[in-house]
Length: 302
Image (cartoon, helix red, strand yellow):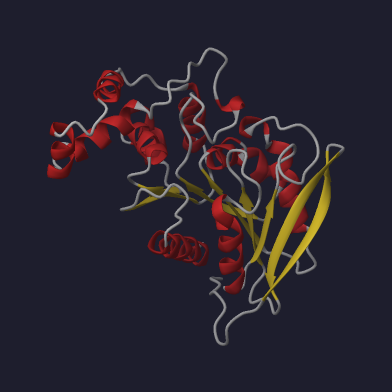
């Protein structure tokens, strides 16, 4: 049976805060739900990086409230060692217990969920994918995943936790080679960029550093291999959403369209959609509206 979002008068939302035990630590959680639930569908939002459950510029709080207005029950939380949660931050590659704790919490809600979906951006999307098989076995009501701008890079970027990088990774403050190539391709067709270069308004040193990295061989990252192996074996509906000019999305798509991405592309459970945007967190109004529409339509279809 397909379920439609809430119809009629504008939905009001109630927000509650609480803690749940996770392996002896306390995880802070926020739940948004419509005052009159339109359905029995729950959505868990997993935070990426070291972001707290409100998200960048309160983006996840806004996403949660808007989805709740459509009749869904939304749960977001701080991973252990982040924000209001206790314990040690072990990073997104070791967040299975945190995710499972959140799934348990929404399953326990008094509404009695019939379906649960899970959403994550950046390394949260990676964390969801690598734990998806175990989650589907433990939580029968888990019905699908929404993965946005997945993280597939070994080198830790400024907003990424240190655990994202292997011990032998060297941070060079540059985007991936794929992202640099995409950026340069755009710039060489932009007259304003040439004007800035000829007027001396461009850092030549950075240009040469970028060019050098852009010609590097596309060796598959450890994180990328782990992530795409997980995608290939997913057996539940999964929607991947990309802001196609975002550096993280560009790096993901480079693998996706290549040889190692073949198995994931061939997986009938996975569908991919791209938006003409560079907003990593879908922060601008147009990107945010697109994200809400993609999530809502996806859930209705399942």
